[in-house]
Length: 256
Image (cartoon, rainbow, N blue to C red; front, side):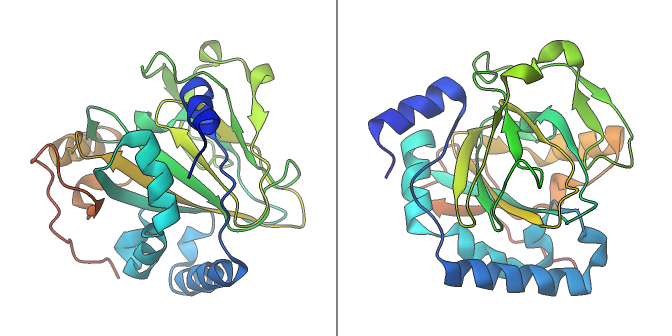
């Protein structure tokens, strides 16, 4: 469980690093699962933004009771997993992720999600660890983003330079198996990886079920912006009940 101080830190800074770590045996299984995914889908060399569409076995890692206990302290007892992603920043030529807010992309009404970012390899400043702008979540508003189609970026929308001060950024340095929880509105990004060590990270996107995963909004955004069509995501009730009574938990077919 998170301490009261850690819960307060999450509220104040927009992220927190708990003491809990995944075991080495669990990490080995995740790495093997990721290797299997890449063997079948080499196009996910940098990112797989819809992990469960391609391999539902990753869902097992989201059911970790300790992770859900901590998430419950932050977002309440009714928890939906609406997405998992894998960010594989390869050694030597791993791409940069520009500063952004996750909520800029997500079809959730009202916008609310706690992301669990898990280090599958050690995350360091040398291999492109995540960087947070502490407190940038406090307005609970989306800031201005600009479209930037840069082949060296993992995302095509970047926070406008006027919206954040990178000198305030804190590095998320983690051992393999370590993790952080962060708010949907916090500004964050990561540098490219030119080191000889990979920096793989897996995320769980946990939504309180007082919010709704809005498939119509997802389809409209896809029509306007292109990119991944998130209207066909399968979402999963991991704990409690659907407090909104409006979420659609129908399992969509996995993509081959």
